[in-house]
Length: 138
Image 1 (cartoon, rainbow, N blue to C red):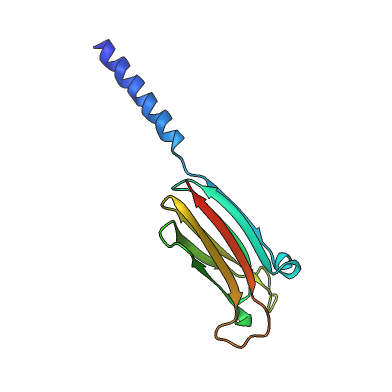
Image 2 (image 1 turned 90 degrees about the horizontal axis):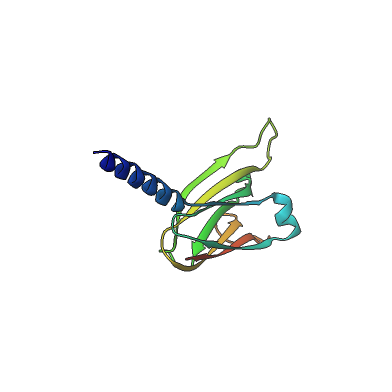
């Protein structure tokens, strides 16, 4: 009887230890308006495990007509989990806010996420801001 209880306790502890080894990691990337003005083409590299997430904060101002969009070279490696926008603080008309994007690693492999901040349609004379993320999921 005591042996069974001891065995159950040991198995429970082992299961807890094993589950703590499989936790995912969150990575963060913040790119401000000033960062893009200094360098309109930014690049980052990430090495992830399945379940890890990348949270990106990008300068954005929808009142200008510009918007962030992205394309991936491989759609089945990383998937968009969330996308949100926070208004600027205070009553500053025309001020930029922040867009938040969260991507989750879902399969092993390599992909490139290319994000561009461009106006809708065509004919803009301004070069788009770009963020390229090279992602390896192991």
